[in-house]
Length: 172
Image (cartoon, rainbow, N blue to C red; front, top):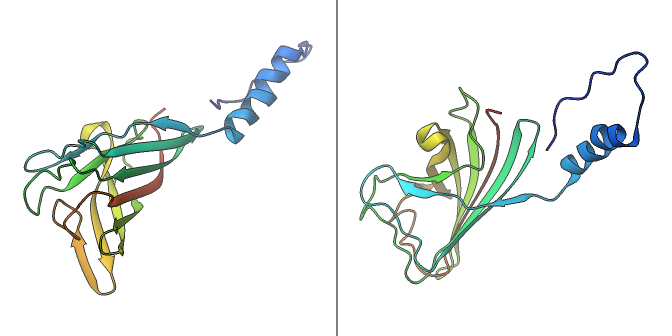
């Protein structure tokens, strides 16, 4: 994890341990592998969605207070969309608490209907709900648009995929 650099003082002895901490460890953090996280998935209104035998995975890289993240929800045969109709407004949890005042920044997303080989591009916004999440995804395909929920932009079924990614400032 990156952190502020050391303030050196005149006459201080530079040791291998200090150099490793101040240079090697910082670069390893910046250039290191992304960390895994399991995003929470819920809805603002109606019944909450359930994962069933689907999968939801996330990865992130935090450098200083900047967080880059990705998530992928793959629909299973027992995954349930929740809500029962439009308006439940899905949300997905973030890997680290966001800084105050970060709302209304754009998140990129994609929805894939694998049974019909349809792809919908989507954008979402950040929210302070649940200590930080992304929500209100608007999917578009050509001139058509729909708010992402249990029945839009299509009826979700096994092997459909939702993918999202973004960047934000973490609280710490």
